[in-house]
Length: 123
Image (cartoon, rainbow, N blue to C red):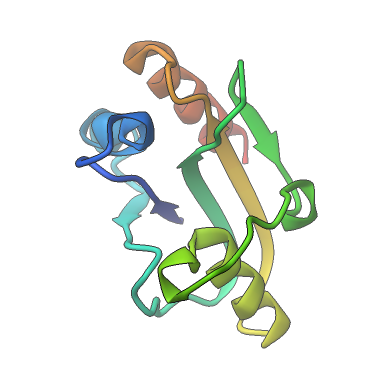
């Protein structure tokens, strides 16, 4: 299974998904983890699983629809984020069901790895 991983190593509150990526690759060698930049074009199709930091979460959560997220204000192309890209791809019919494994920004790395690995094993 392909799993999209979003985050920024340059911005600490958004870095957790990238920090746990090596551990997830070791634990789930049959899955392919793709660290992607929300501002680039992606070659993806079908149903997607995404790992991302979700601001204001206090515990990890699995979201089964993009409708669970509020759209942030857009003032320029710099405000075009992963959610906007996923919604666009969905509207164009290029992707199917999207499952987001949302992690709180301040979650412990080991606990985040355990949660994500368990969620991916169940799916």
